[in-house]
Amino acid sequence: MLDMKLTIKRVPTVVSNYQEDAGEQPRGGCGRNCLGHCCLPVSELPVYAFKANSTKLPLQKDAVPTDFFINLLLGQWEDRMTQGLFRYDVTACETKVIPGNLGFVAQLNEGRHLKKRPTEFRVDNVLQPFDSSKFNFTKVGQEEVLFKFENSGTDDSYFLRSAAITVVDRAPNVVAINVSPIEYGHVLLIPRVLDHLSQMIDQESFLLALHMAAEAASPYFRLGYNSLGAFATINHLHFQAYYLTVPFPVEKAATQRISLPEGGMKSGVKVSKLMNYPVRGLVFEEGNTLNDLANVVSSACIWLQDNNVPYNVLISDSGRKIFLFPQCYAEKQALGEVSQELLDTQVNPAVWEISGHIVLKRRDDYEEASEASAWRLLAEVSLSEARFEEVKAYIFDATGLVQLQVEETNGIIYAPVPVSPSAVAEGCLVLP
Image 1 (cartoon, one colour):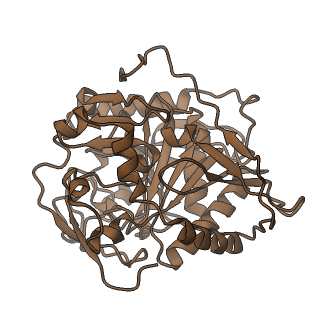
Image 2 (cartoon, helix red, strand yellow):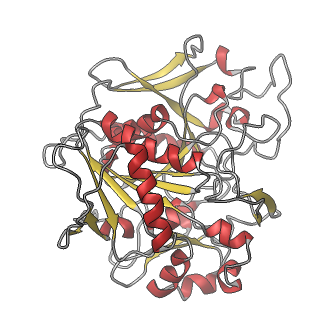
């Protein structure tokens, strides 16, 4: 828990081509077809409407996923690439799976941090008020938007190529490209874009993210969230997502089920903790409904942000499995407790890095990347064992979970590893 004013300097990630313009939008329309109040209410955008009854979590063996959503998203993303909206071609970046037990994924992206000066960020306040004078997603041009993402109110999903924006009842949720992508299909999910929500999770926004994962119905499409203080640099509520056709190391890590009283968790959510992984974390899965899972995990996130504990979230397995990582790397960095060797790599360990997909900016780091070097970096992210257990106890209290006094001694579970598509060769990735 952070108690003093702490700052770090880092190069901010440019997620939109309009990010350089941080000023207020003029009244009467900005003239560039943005997502602000001046333009959006009189615009038309494509709409993907997800099924209202997807609140039930399907068992993986019973799931018959449709590929319409993921094909739509990736097709629209490739269209924006054709239009030249990205700052570089991420599909040309060298990527490899590092030999070792967990198979960390390393990418060389030498240009992602260039042409920007380091900016000072406060890392001691997980909750900060929305500031309209700084860059936010209402300043994004509509050409960067793929579609709105809304509840259909029916038992079916559907797609409309164009529909008028209605903001009388509620602001729209939009899916937009990240113009500095980490991976193929890298997008942003921005809940209720016109409501100027700061970067903080609530039950409604988290459920929306789970719906997106469920609609994608692919083990290779994950969503991630970074809180302020855990390497989010834009204080406007958003999730990130992309498509990577190999399992993340954290998905392969062993877990230990945390014993709960029989019948004591009516939601059906099961909780485990990661074992033999460099970052300590909790794993939430199953649940009677998608809503039940969202309620439990969002309650945990709310406690963390209300108590100034930075954290990252990975939404995996089509929304059926959630990894929650309280972290302290930025705090250590601000206090001068991170080695210069790690700082020189310029790696900011946010959700993707913590999950095992590490973007490196220097060729030497990429060539010399090993499981030991990845472990050394990520170990600095993790809370200590004592601090993690303390935070875990508070999370259990906040979510209504009750842990049995006697831990299971043989409850180690080794996660099943999805079989990679045939297009992925051993030791390297062939991107679509």
